[in-house]
Image 1 (tube, rainbow, N blue to C red):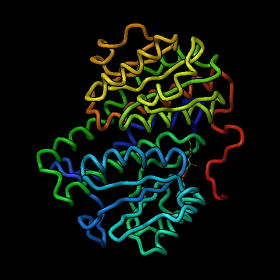
Image 2 (spheres, rainbow, N blue to C red; image 1 turned 90 degrees about the vertical axis):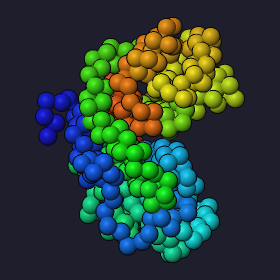
Image 3 (tube, rainbow, N blue to C red; image 1 turned 120 degrees about the vertical axis):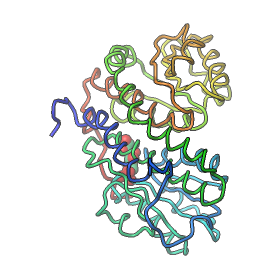
Length: 364
Ligand code: F6R
């Protein structure tokens, strides 16, 4: 049931503050200001390496997790798309935690990668939305997302709930490795607790985003730029736009622009810049200005501070609430999803059932 929404995708975007809060509530003990994981039969503190495997949108959660786990826990992380991992003879040393991420829990390549890791004797965990799925049954440690059924083919609420679990896992691992002091853990818990309200604030810009969608809908190519944990979000933005609006889109690390892709820029190319204020902001803005100098039409997504500093000259701006840069991808996902959604609606595509795509990819 779509309720009063026109599409399941729109409904699921709007459900995010509630389902992310639900997911967080099972991983945060807010009264004690601690993060928590379900009981497990292995020692998280013994993990010396994390190998993350997933497909599509779920793989971008893994890529964001790499920034979080390495920064907080100082444990090296590698991220692979499952179709590559399976066939590249990955080196899986002892004390590796194999982590799969999947909404359906049935994606053929991810399931095969999980079985391969288990066959190699690797301890596995899974961030999974469907609790009765094959992956949920086969992982050593199930880390459920509580997104509820996701009907729209383009993943939205599953993505942000996966991120919520990933944040909790990163913090737990950091604590188990003796890298997270109680005060820092309390701060992280507070930042995470603020996410649902921040998502609501992000949703309040829906009409504005709808207004700019018509301009984007006329473009042939769209670029998304981000740095740090917002780089994988740029990849996710491009994927979301491609799959439901059929507009060609690419995500890049902002610093990579001058190594090739800036050649694409002219007045016809909208560039979506994801840049919360924080330590990486200045660098991203200088990449953005290089784009503007070549006529690129920038849509800057930032907070009030960032927009005051760099919003001038943009085609459009979208103001996000101020959030800690580490958890920004959870909140900035909302405008990125809304933009793809409204562009697709403006183009008249079948938003919930895009051509050539299936919700669950159970063949290779
Ligand atoms: C994109 C999308 C896909 C899935 C991918 C993995 O919006 O939904 O890229 O993320 O097919 O699916 P799951 O998470 O079910 O393994």
